[in-house]
Amino acid sequence: MKAKMFRALLPLAIVFTMVSCSSDSSEGSSADNKVVTTYNYNETELRLVTLINDYRASIGLNTLQVINHISYKSQEHNIYMIDNDVVNHDYFQQRSNNLIQVLGAERVGENIAYNYQTPESAMSAWLNSPAHKDNIEGNYTHLGISVTVDETTGKKYYTNMFIKKK
Image 1 (spheres, rainbow, N blue to C red):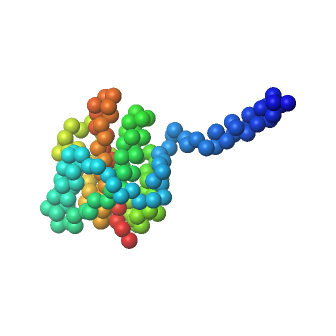
Image 2: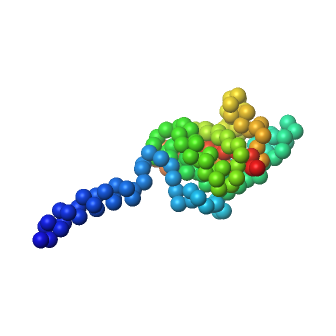
Image 3: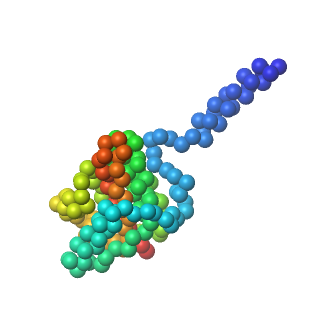
């Protein structure tokens, strides 16, 4: 009797387990529908915020206000890139949709970089790339930034996201 019940319930347990686990191939977190209000910035991140805002001010643009939630979403992407050994904009639409839904963004842009040793070198690379420079000079109001070091390789991963709030 116990064996029959076990065989009958085993498929249900397997299906439940498969449905309840999140996919390794996507980014996601418990913060998907709520604002993350805390983020601990490292020196590189703080320096990049200053570099971006100083550059924008030098060409007559508004400076951008930092929002911790955007930095958190940027950090999620860095962790994804490290975990998957890639440097790309995978799942940008998911991050963008989150910022639209949670923060009321009407526009979202993203810059990434990999293995620059200093914030100045990452900033220089972004300014020398037309698409990245367009984001830095874009019609935005807020930004978030994350620079995460891969503990295995020591290489730095950078994600910088911009939004324009409605």
